[in-house]
Image 1 (tube, rainbow, N blue to C red):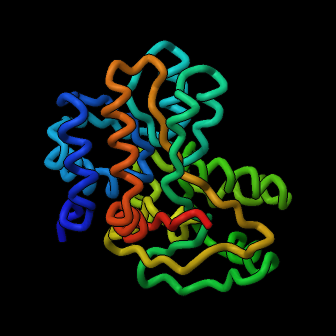
Image 2: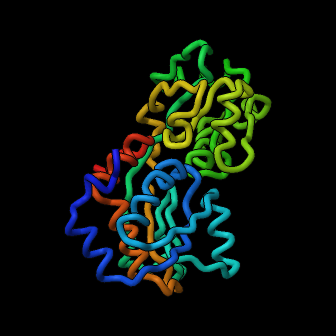
Length: 249
């Protein structure tokens, strides 16, 4: 089903007629890759703008930006507030796209563990032969901090399987090179041989909010705002949700 067919014709007409065609450089967190790749072509068809996207982990983008790299739009699996404070993102353009929690996924066929309580979650980790996570991704950094908070860092070191790059954790889990992943939902939706089991206990949970913004150095700010507006339409929200990103309450 086409995203454009669900979006208000008046909105798309405004986007197309009020802004000259532009080429947008967009930095997109790897966790949003599938959803963004589904939505960007519809935005291009609706508006005449072109989107050039690069996908990476948020810390890598932040390092590039601090080194002077410019962009038109950035979408992160974290709040862009830090970049606003640095003067890199226009505060008025901050856009909330959705959120995901931290949950548990397994390689298909592996015994389904119990992690309904804090003690059960800890026992699951200690009984697992191999556990992966999103590396420097937002949920990965949280998971490592959670191990430290639970006093489990040393005990888990032999079991951890750090991923390589965007999509690395999903690849390890899909191939059976890790039996469990503690991870946000978007990176593993639709990946073969992976079964999503649900969220970790509320006492341990950390909700990751995905946000976007327009770069203060962008020469295509109007088109960048049009892209962010497109990504928050009800039709786009359906695409985000199908790929693991829920609306923010």
